Length: 114
Length: 115
Image (cartoon, rainbow over all chains, first blue to last red; front, top):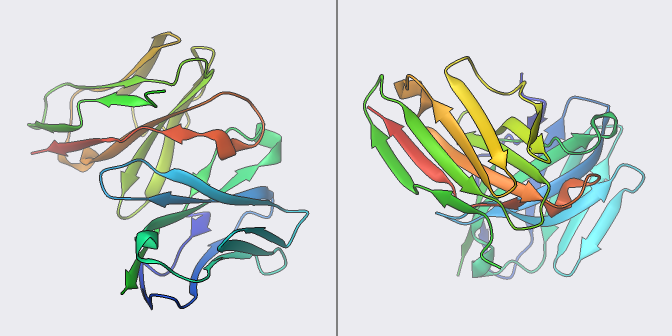
């Protein structure tokens, strides 16, 4: 039972354009959401997060949007750069688990076309 | 800071053999996590420790899997006997506080192939 879903296994975007990665979740008890980025042969690295009390969080070229009613979040990258080519994982945590556990999606491979 | 260190980086073994994966967390971190990455299921949390004590092992797939943390600087994940379906990339991660998990630092992973 996949509680965090990334339905697009891959995405290709032209350099300079906007990349939009999507994530859906089923557990309404999730209250904190994160995006991780992973390059080949490396471990995932934290990118950006958002609490359920917000609907948007921005960090430079990266913005995460949260729609609680739709149980949906998205990561926007503007403008996209070749170095953004990686696998992106969406993750969620439950406050009543003390926040240590993360539930990850299956990932979306983003390719930026020069 | 060397980051989280995992060994070996690659492991190829035959079905039925014992496999031991190793992890050295970042010094000072008091949480350690073991994850498994597969194409079908993404990143799954297998087990995590706090101050060397296992807190939640509900993600461990079956009794063939076991994990230990004998001290703050070392942990092992053992599979005995190994099966082809165990083939995956196994990640270790560590963090230095409870609370929000944006401070989990991942190692480079061990790619396990069971023939």
